Image (tube, rainbow, N blue to C red; front, top):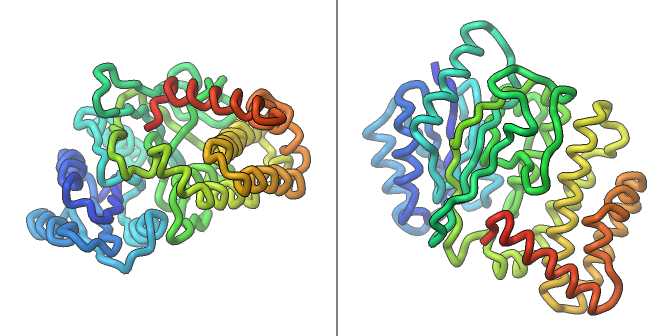
Length: 338
């Protein structure tokens, strides 16, 4: 039995993908690794084939036409046989000891016939050139090593959101909620985390620094210049998330608040990138994005627009935009973005 399927989306990843693969191989026969070669033109397929041949009961290689990160995740999920499903980007890796803890917990769920929809763990910003790595943990917000529901969740600090790095979903739950990520689109990891949330009934948090999130490549999708260049895709993802749910219909109050705060962060990131681009047409796009939220979900718009983040992002004039940009610089330093 495979307890966790790890999908590794790879696009021209020859220089770093082996580190990711080797870190997961520490799980032995308890894990399945699906390497999705997303139309690479370098040695990605050759490297993937090498590991699939060496570890035929653990590693699968799937080669497809280029469809982007989201389509690679879709492919991994479609072929997953593990009880749980986790995405590991090809330039990231996992901690061996934490992997053993998570496998042990999942084995216990399977043995006792317990359905836990989401397993959460910590992640580490492995930022190039930074000696003291920032760890995002949830011990203040979530019960530790106990099965819990949304009513048991406490207060999340700003910057403490559950991201793709920290989440491991029950595979069947993802399939039942019909998760499908857009093709040829960056930043879909936000959809991957956000969309399934109302379908999550039970959770389990392991206070261990599992996922290592590398930051430092110039071409990385979270590099600020790259993000500004792809701001239309950021807007697309934000609008897609707005379209998913009218939040007043989310029954659980704590879940509704969490989702609203997550959406507020997405609106903030989109707004600040549009402001920092310094292009007049992007200021119009910012206005259109806020109007879209207002039209689609008026109550959510009011709470986000007149919250602290919404007000900061909508200060009038050039001086207001300078304050907004300063707020982003502070957040960037605080949360370790590239």
